[in-house]
Image (cartoon, rainbow, N blue to C red; front, side, top):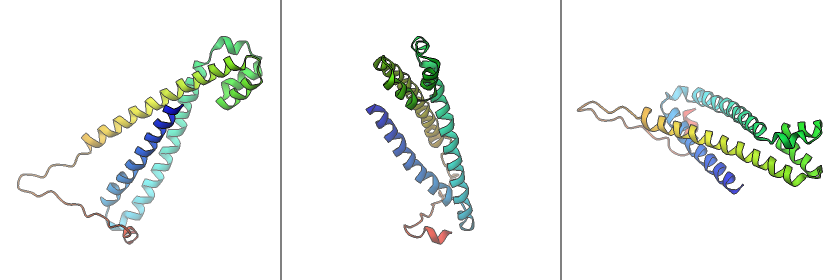
Length: 165
C-alpha cells in the first residue's frame, strides 16, 4: 500500500505544479479585459473535468475489481453477502469480518482491489505521458522568422493579479 500512497503523492504534486503553470500561461495570453472571464471558464472546465475523470476512473476501478474477484469463493457465500462483496471494498471488508473464512476473503478482496488500483494508476500515468508529450511537442512556441525577435511575455508581479481583474 505504500507504493500507492507514493504514486498518489507524485500525481497530486505534479497536478498541482502543472495546473499553476497552465493557468498562468492561459491567463497571460488573454487581454486584460478578459482575464476574469478566462479565469472563470478555466476554473469551470477544471472542475467539470475533474468530476468526469473521477467518475470514469472510478468506473474502471470498480469494473476491474468486480472482474478480478474469485468466482468460486463468491459462490460459496450466501447471495446477500456475495452481493455486498461485489458492491464495494468497504462492504466487502465488512462481510470478511463476519465470515468464518474471513482471512482468505480479505486476501482475495485486497488482491482484487490493488490490481484494479494499479491498472487505474497506469492509465493515469499514460495520460500524464500523453499530456507531457502534447506540452513539449505540440504546444511549443513558434520560432521567430529570420531577423525577428521573439516576443517577451510580461510576467504578472506577485500581489498584482487583482489589478488584472
